[in-house]
Image 1 (spheres, rainbow, N blue to C red):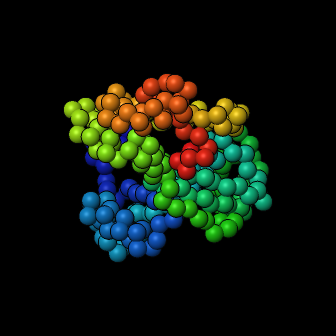
Image 2: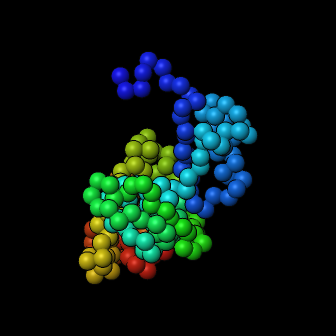
Image 3: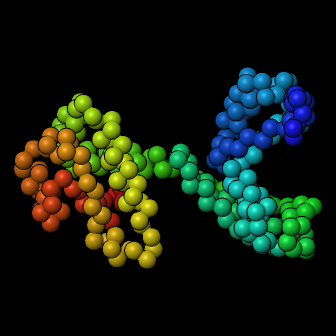
Amino acid sequence: SKYGATLDPNRIKWCLTVPAIWTAREKDMMRDAAFRAGMILDREAGSSKFQIVYEPEAAAVACTKQHVLDLVAGDVFMVVDAGGGTVDLTSYRVENAPAATGADAIEPHVVFKEAAIGSGGTCGGTYIDGNFLDWVKQKTTPQAWDTFMQSENAREDVFYLVEAWEQVKLALKPRHLEQAAAGQRIPLPVALWDSIPLPIQETLKGEANGRTRHLILTPSDPEF
């Protein structure tokens, strides 16, 4: 009822977002993928129907339109886009902002200009999770980890382990830094604990104040 019985492809403009650190080659690969998917019909002449947008720019526009940010000309702000794969840092200067407030505050246009060259890296959440699992493997010994990974419920147990790690990350707030300095307790699956050699179990119990099936993650650990 909103768009009619058919949707005319020629009336669609596709905007695909990409990380700010992507190179021209990577953006061209995205354009080629859009062409192969049928989003644009002409690989070379599709620019009017297809636009690649940096993810931080899209976030800034969205925050403006939702009035999360009340910007005026001359303001400078930074967007920290910490995703699963990449972390992008970009800063923008507001070149033009309408004087109106309320529902019309973003009309006709808000113009952003990059204030400094953006930077970033492939250090998003999935890499942090991977480093955490590597830390668990080293703390419990690689041999115990390999034995654990061959157990019947290894997939579910790893999911449980990562979920416990996720709760630790969510709890790390500035006001809780003193508590974090004392160490964060990570519960281990039974199958993993049972695979750890007894001398290593005793060492880990000592670090966890006598608790079994727990690792203590402290700020001195590189994964913290």
